[in-house]
Image (tube, rainbow, N blue to C red; front, side):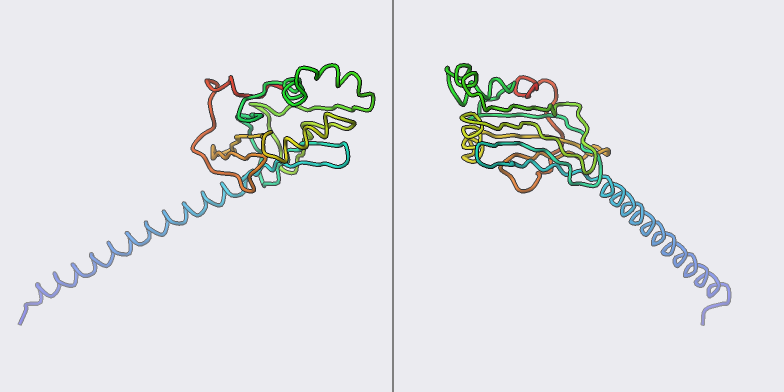
Length: 194
């Protein structure tokens, strides 16, 4: 039969082991709760950009909206035609209408043209909507609409949340794609300027 001292030692070890298990469990629960809180904070400022077309007879408009919960910090904006980057709205007209673009545009007395810029450094607040391009009138709106709906004309934005989580979205994708980071300024030759 074990002595009273050895029983006391055994009880002390069981109590010590139980205390260690409780402490490790409490630590694990605290770490898990901290992770949940961090995930909730990230979700509370999650931006989501949506690139959409508004169109009708002789009307084409490209709209970018932040339908998320937090501000979208735009880090990169690209507009391409058949994979070639366009840098300005004038490049778009010349690419789509060809060498006679200036003559066609000047002859179109019904053409209404409005543009807004979303570029590196722009911030779109939740619920914000920017009409990047609005064309109404004759030849150009119809040509741009045809190019956009055929997939030849593509808008692509890379944006980040306040916590540095980043996504890309294109004019032909339904869902943003999570990315590690947005292209840096070294890729500026592809960025849309205005």
